[in-house]
Length: 406
Image (cartoon, rainbow, N blue to C red; front, side, top):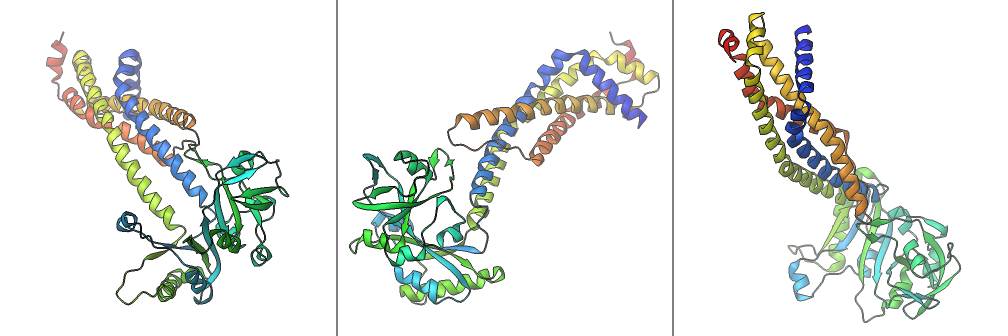
């Protein structure tokens, strides 16, 4: 251990004796590590932001929606979920908890005292807030009596309130959706922006009111979110839902489903895979610069061996073994790369934060601990690997020949 500590001290002294050369040598490692950390911190920050949007929706929440392929979009013959499918889901499937039908209502926009907006209009039922874990900041949400009585009431998002210049607490205000007057009974908690797009520019109205606004001539776009009563029965309920909806849609045996039933956390799992792959690919591409930095370290270490040939001869004459010389030069190369890696990690994270701050609505950069440790470890590993050749050359020098070197 004493020999190792002495070799470490000698390596550090050598680097400090040539500060400028050491800094220039480590630039390649610094830039490579910094680039990796900047890219990974941006991807991880975006990933965590997406997952936080679904943090309150567990694996027992599922969605039913139509499935369309390229052929459907090309021909314009899109599959839709029908009201009968929602009824089958709600009344004919054991194990299903609460069901929240969701309908996108096509209107001419919203207006209030001469100001206009273009919100997303969602028609749903009172179960929506429980299934989606969204709750009002002011007032209340849609209740069952609103739906049964087809009351013209609405719960709005914060962005719509701001666009229409409504009061801070908009409850009790009247505004128009299309040609119909609606009373604001609540405003939902703010969700913020995602990639520059507001998640609060919407109005929620009772489901049956939405059906009336759409009329009989338009095919509404409907989906449904629902809960499973027992977590352990998720897969069984999924199959029951498929059978019930197939029967409701009149699909014959052998026909493919034109709908899909997915758990709410399926998106998070798929997104994790995508971001994981993207992180690995981007990190690998940017990490090539680490190899370039490693080559720079090898070149400088070879120069250092030549410069210190006489010193190596003296060490061997005093009893230093081949192993001692090898360890000293490997430590020097590894320490050089590690210092560059640490500086690169700090600068890379700062660059990632700066880029995230310059993009409107982009989530803050995040650098998980495992990324920092991996980046520092890989930097040191690159230094050691590329230091093997110079260290071996130094360790193999003949002490007599080394002492003769001028």
